[in-house]
Length: 119
Image (cartoon, rainbow, N blue to C red; front, side):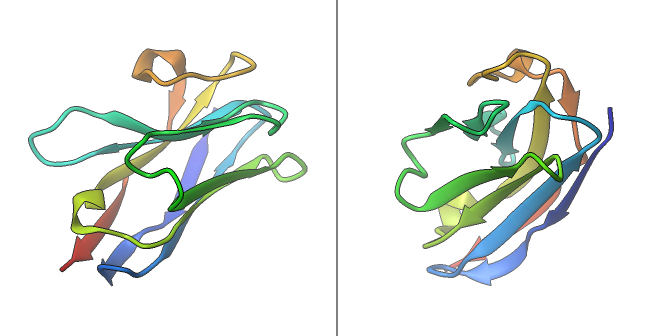
């Protein structure tokens, strides 16, 4: 399974970015992030059919995950970015229907993409 992520970059606080990821099949999908010196954490995930989403408390109301099943693609719209959002973001795919909040709930990982938010 190949996951091709794109997007990311550098923005000022309050700005927005969109991350995109295309999978070579239909899966439950998730976005994780890892900041320097910290463990990888879930940001958001979406079920295989796209009907249910989950957000970490730290991003609720600011980030939106969406899925285009026709294209096997998932996007993460990130608004009102904060310096605390600075991290490497990873796209992940799960063979399960729902995905999950833990790294081991996901079977395939894309390359990370850097998001840097300056104050």
